[in-house]
Length: 50
Image 1 (tube, rainbow, N blue to C red):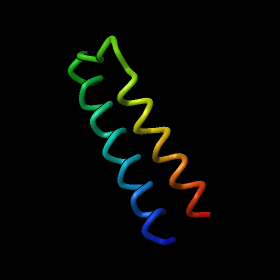
Image 2: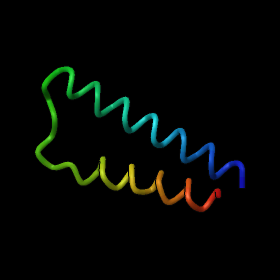
Image 3: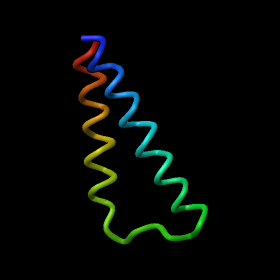
Image 4: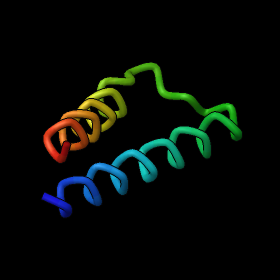
């Protein structure tokens, strides 16, 4: 179960870092579905780890 928590954390950090990198360059994509799916997957993994 601890690996689910670690995977959740890594997905959340990586997705957020990529989002803020693109926001800093003012290159936010029109289609945000990929980011939303990854954040959702991280959320679900984190909830499953609990």
